[in-house]
Image (cartoon, rainbow, N blue to C red):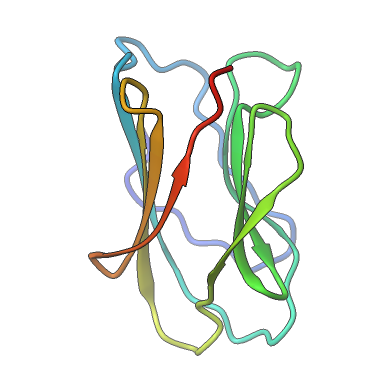
Length: 117
């Protein structure tokens, strides 16, 4: 398991090959991010079970963070972090309640109902 990784913005990535005992009812994915770029593009975090594609992605866009679920087009959250400060981002997916919650620096700032599939 990785404990801390630092990237310079040049297409770096980290990959964990297998996660055992993955929780079936809720999942939390979190990371720290800092950006000085006024414009941005790219995936900050993604999860997939196979090479067939991402089940979800958190993307950095010019309008802030966006989330894509189950191979869908990303939807905007209007959550920005391009202010040169470190921010803690947490995405919690509640499978049973079909809700996705996004936190920035410990404050819930976005919710979205997860489609049935």
